Length: 207
Image 1 (tube, one colour):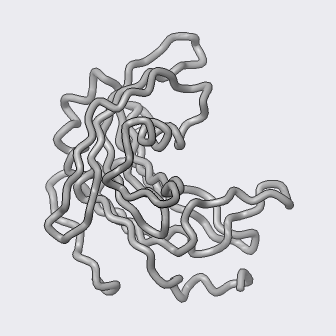
Image 2: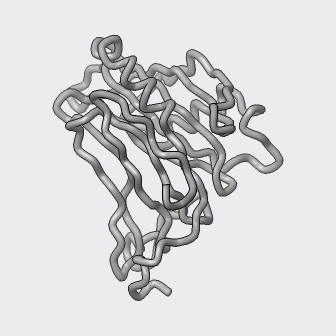
């Protein structure tokens, strides 16, 4: 609210996550390499997630910023992840097709853990606050270390911020999706990410 954005809706069974990302340069991986981000500005990311899930947020040290924004129920295999990829030059959100969003959704995974990513449905919407969003329904197969596959299903919401396509991706097993679908859609609908000034508390030695 202090940043001038609308507060997250209050929904039974869902909790708010409000977090900065990009408030410091990316941390060095091995002293020379840093994982590059697709966005240039600090982003304020906001979304609802099912209450009781474990939350992950970036950490900032002298080495830079590392980690992601996510919420998970590891025991059940449920996940909600913030992801970002570069917006193709000269493109607008509404012009992006299923092939782009297949790559977008897969950007959070390594190629050896999933296959058969399918974008089932894309819907472009303008939310009540004027934000242009794309809602995505998708399925994929998770490859387990034990050698069998698990059918997974999910929903995502994407928008443009700081020359990036940013989104919240929620997924679970195909068996559990029906019981979680309503919550997942509420979480996806709540997602917003906006470029903001870097917060004052990240002053340390990164300047």
